[in-house]
Image (tube, rainbow, N blue to C red; front, top):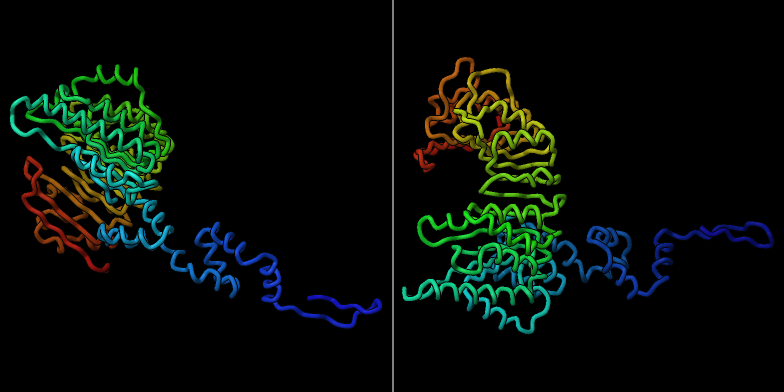
Length: 465
């Protein structure tokens, strides 16, 4: 609103609409400048601009299909075939960048695999003039599985194959390693076939500085030769003392199988991992002191002693999922169920999934007033558990409950409120559905001594009462 004055006195007002004022500001700069500004905005700001003014809406209209593509991609990616995903990269540069840089859940990303020397050579030849990122979702698998033909000079020929393959891998990573975020690496072999697992790991890690997710495994040939790998920790320690591993500042997730030597695992945890950035750890071969420094850890899957687990009372990472095989260093007949879950109560604000196996078994001797205090827990998997199920009645958000035992689900316990005994084959008759209204899926698995399923009973409740 502008005031108009004539000879010192007011004669009227000239009124401007909000849209006219906005137009005045828009006209300050040419359209090309505004479009450059729009390119710097995030998607939510662009959507706000679409609603703010008709002229801005017109300018942005031609690009409206680009605005929500990253969000939509997260919803549809797992349903797309590889060819369809590659087709999206051809639409425009924006979509290509979104496809290449889209984060993927652990174990759900698409990978580009190399298993032979010829496959690496062919890729390098095809990408001879390529610049930038050639990997959808930036995931690569390196796992040589080729062996010499015939038995004459088998080991000499195998060693030559290994050396040639990993030399070509180093050339491959020198060119494209900067683009890799997820690496699935099967490194090393038996000791007398070069290169060793510790050499493979180090040579690869120095060439993938942007690595966020690591899956590491090792393999062997013949019966019992895995002992040749894990029995040389002193050699591995000496190697890494002279040839330290690089710090991978972006690394967030690791998954290492049981055949990788303990000394290599320890070197990775202490040398490569930045404690505050680690979010997910899956290990098959032990528990390490380095875990206690991972202050932002969200997922932990490991074999752990009851004594090591107790040390977590002094550590408070925001764990939301754990999968633990718990044993005791002391000679005991069973892991105490109540003590175990009392330790986990410190994660009551974050924990939503728990998978626990006791070695030899989990046990609760008698019915009492103990209740699991994990108010956010939605999924519980108990393996080899002997005791009443009353402790789960405090879990008001529990939706999935799985029990795996060698025998029937439970022995009768005086005073138990939950009725399971005798209902394994008639799950719907158990009163657990009334006691836990949130429960939607219940599963009983009865196994033999080798862990193979003998009986399997389950029930899905489609709607809560």
